[in-house]
Amino acid sequence: MSEKFSPTLRIGDLSDFIAPSQACVVSLKGIKAPTRKPDKPEVLISNKHKQKLKIRKSKVSLPMLSSACPGWICYAEKQLGSYILPYISSVKSPQQTIGATIKNHLCQTMGLSPEEVYHVTVMPCYDKKLEAARDDFVFQVESEDGIHEKEDLRITEVDSVLTSGEVLDLIQLKAVDFKALEESPLDKMFTNVNEEECLYGVAGSSGDYAETTFRYAAKTLFGKELSGPLEFKTIRNSDFQEVTLEVDGKTVLKFALCYGFQNLQNIVRKVKMQRCDYHFVEVMACPSGCLNGGGQIKPKPGQSPKDLLQALAGVYMENVLVADPFNNPLVKTLYDEWLEQPGSKKARKHLHTEYHPVVKSITAQLHNW
Ligand code: SF4
Image (spheres, rainbow, N blue to C red):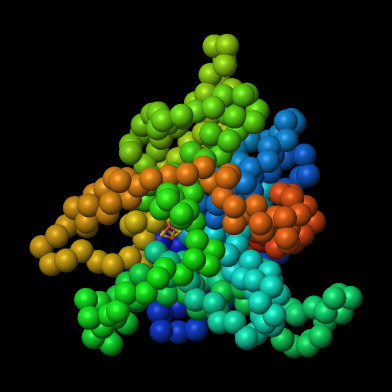
């Protein structure tokens, strides 16, 4: 079963092991880590294709490490502890961002209370189930004057997480014949596709945090509008790449993609030795990113996992029309109607989180003797 989790979770102790059919009830709560200092650059990544960035020019400790992958976060909290946690972006993952938006804002605009809405996500890995079960993503219903209306009513941002493999299992179990189904219009709620069917984001199968943030930083900090694909340079392997921006012969931006446990360990080592000169690193626990997640649909008989990965990556790259995620009207409306502006008190309350170094249980420590 453990192979269903990301490699980073597998190498840790699996005392938080859950089977797919079990409810996610495991708390990863531990001791509070120091939160990011206010003078650090703040990257607001509201979800894969709807991103906001605000960077304050200041003296900061670098790099900023992305926070979207729960496999990586779990590894950082359990194995690395408080020295690495302040480097991780405090922005919630896409799953929890959309969960907070639905349960806090959408419910209000639709005149529903959060407990009337059951929010299900479809995700590439089992780590996402653990993420949804974190105490950090549970809140209490508050009345307008801030007093808890129902003391014991705890609302989860995400009620249930299904992997794509589990969705396929359900479809097969119910013997659904898609060809026999009547066509119905696409659900446009929180869509990230515009009227011209362009995706707000970049073409690609995983992440895109580094690319979108890089383009935005180049434009807003250095006045450079980058058109066309970015030139990522392979460093060690295809899962470790970097992109730089030079101005007047000087490197002013240096971003990296770092996928898979081995590459991740290298970055962590460099950060620990204060020898990491990247401004931003998109960290993903699985080699090749989310397409290779433990919950994804398995290859057909006779098809190798590599062939399936290549075929899927092609689908995400070819014929994908993209639009600037910073022009997504939906995100703009959310800030206008609810969050006010990136970095506001409300945005920090609903879209940001904290990380906690996990203290190993006595049993786990004895086990390691
Ligand atoms: S890289 Fe994607 S699939 Fe793998 S653990 Fe992270 S979020 Fe899950």
